[in-house]
Image 1 (cartoon, helix red, strand yellow):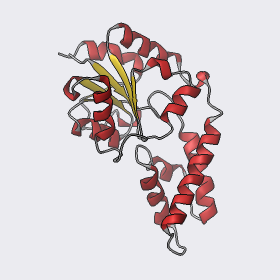
Image 2 (cartoon, helix red, strand yellow; image 1 turned 180 degrees about the horizontal axis):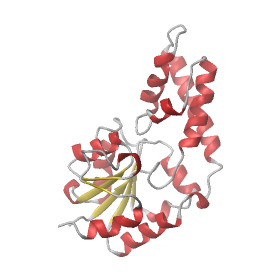
Image 3 (cartoon, one colour; image 1 turned 30 degrees about the horizontal axis):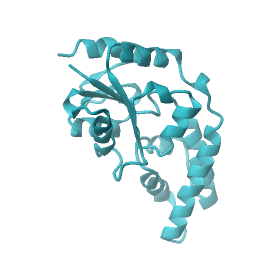
Image 4 (cartoon, one colour; image 1 turned 90 degrees about the horizontal axis):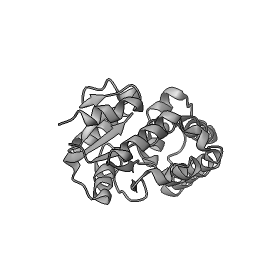
Length: 215
């Protein structure tokens, strides 16, 4: 029986792709680098540094110094946080809130397992903070997904073992992280048809029944 449910944030509970895209696009434009939504999709679930490295694959200028790399990452994050101020509780679908309430009523411990360093800010803007017992995010890890650290720390914060924890993910890197961490990996969205998933769902409406049927 599962005792805990660990949710990735972006793409599962909320959708901030548009803000990431706009911020990275502005940064890429400053460097004269072509950037589109297809490239943006490659950045899902990976760290800010790794995302910048992917964007720089098309860079043709002088090699950037470490100081410049840090400056561009800071620019992107500051712009992203500015855009996130547009978020509100209305950005969370009612089925998401209903799922979280139902899981809590059934006795599951709930946590966030996100590589984003802005996870707590997003939870605050969307009025989701109180829904979770713990938050593991980019501020407390040294390795991003597909490394399992963020999920393992979430389980640790909840006081449960990984093998009684289910992780909900929309990215293949996240599913790989959950599997590597010994958790029950549930795919949703883009990860729903990923072969490494233990199960998949079309929406969070299906999640409580799925967990209840696990033995």
